[in-house]
Amino acid sequence: MRQIEKDKDKNEPNEETEYTQVSRELQALRAELESTEDKKKVISLVSDQVGGWTKRVSLKLNGQLQEIGELGIQTKNKSLAEVFEEISSISLKHLEKVIEDKKNND
Image (cartoon, rainbow, N blue to C red; front, side):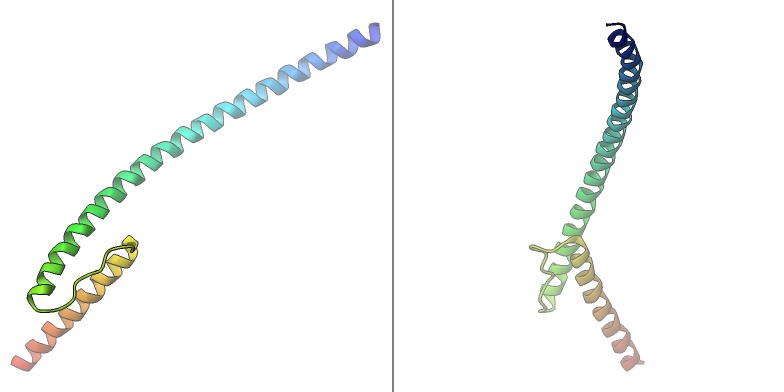
């Protein structure tokens, strides 16, 4: 019986220590989760802003391209990176044409 009581006394500090460690770990994980959720909100806001800007630029550029009889930017089912790449490509093409026209006029 005494052996059981001694073993019981030995287990209690270990359980308490383990509980304390698990509590600290849980607290750290909750803080990390909160930080991650805050970052997610910021990323979502920035993504919405960039997406809105991209849509406005695409609409403006499509209007200008239609005026000169060219196909516009296709944004449906494309990532922002793909849309930016297409905007860049079209812009570069037209800038090169402006430079070429200027050289020919001089």
